[in-house]
Image (cartoon, rainbow, N blue to C red):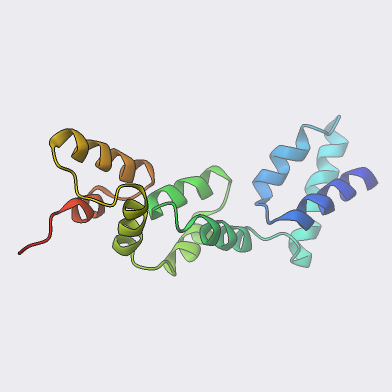
Length: 146
């Protein structure tokens, strides 16, 4: 139990984790049902003390990945890490304008509008892979009106 507690504290001292991430990471190191019950009890205790928070993890994740990814990708990444829909929605509620973030990401990568269909498709795929919605990507790649 002491080794499990130390391992858990060391992980949390480095960065925020979701409860599901810690469970997946530490359950591999447990040898039986009793240790898994102890791990669950430790995670419950740490949540009660406020040392472990999926809401705080979601906020930290969004803040660190905000400049590179759109809200669709952020939502998917958080869901894969076991964060609840409520915590995801709260973390994403305070995002800056999606269109301006998409333009910033696109500008860093390409900087100029596509000259042909092949380049247009490439830039659309790039924005989609970063988690920006199709309509946002279209607005980014739309030539300015003169």
